[in-house]
Image (tube, rainbow, N blue to C red; front, side, top):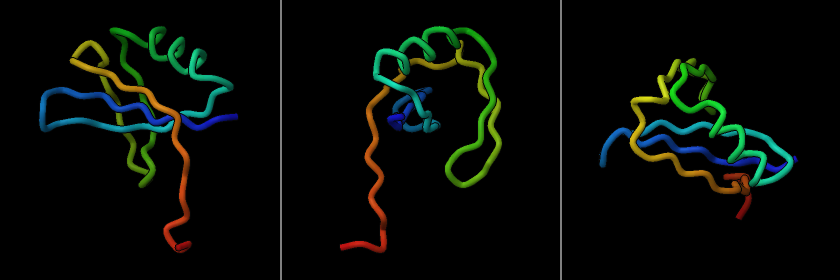
Length: 73
């Protein structure tokens, strides 16, 4: 499984980010398309619960994410 970072932008200053695990970029894109104009819910990396109406989102970005342990240098 790969990890993908999904960022939902409402305007130039306001956004919300979520991380998903999918087999491929294509599958991640398919999931995001299937959620278009719906309410979705998820917990972010801090454990905060979010409900998001995707019809209010202006831009969605998806990219593969590679976690780096902050303790490593």
